[in-house]
Length: 275
Ligand code: MN
Image (cartoon, rainbow, N blue to C red; front, side, top):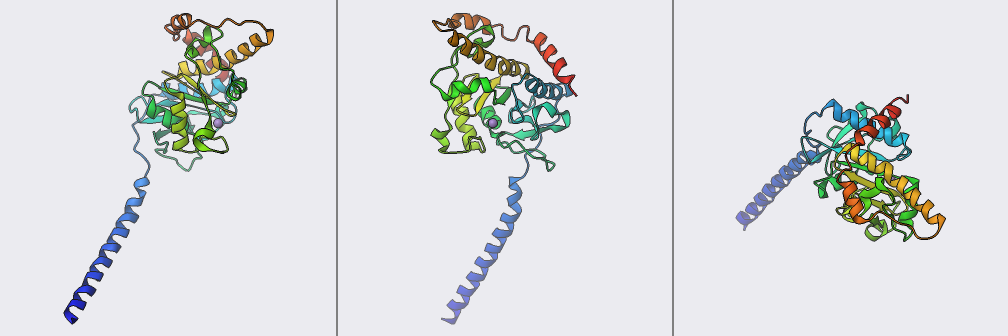
């Protein structure tokens, strides 16, 4: 009897020791929430292009103090580059940070992060073809996210939306929210709504525009709200409106990148000349 009791006590002590060992290990393992490793340095050219993209989109009235633009890391598809939380028109090379696709920063250095950065990480996860992402609140797009009137490709610069622009209804996936994409789940829901399209509207909030390069996504982000304004103006004239035919759009799309360097140079010079 006494012998059994002794064994039981011994067993409890062993369990206690194991318990302590596990909690010590868990405490040590906790920083497994550690910062992800860097995929390595990128070219100054890419950083300069990303800074220019921020300045251009602010200069063109596409981004306000809250929008953002990112680029996928050229050395690792599981990383992307995005500014720290800062108004796009003020972004400099020093503000550019690296994130993993869960939108954890590689080295936060105590800086504030965009609360909606999950938009970028979740789209890069689901769209291997996408190399750059813009999130904008361009006012001209808002009416098309809150009504049943779909955006149409009204002129050659918006041929890229020929297949339609889906509208993301955050209530369907998040219920009543403050409309922001504050976590991975909402980011994933938005990426889902985007599907394989080049853009999606976010009801009562803004839009997300994607592309195969910084230059292409900047061009699309500028031309999309212009197209929306033109569509509204055409509708105001009354009568039938002729949109681009799918075949016309395809032919334009095949050459979308051509000549963009010319616009990019001009947009960039104007935006970067600002103090
Ligand atoms: Mn937003």
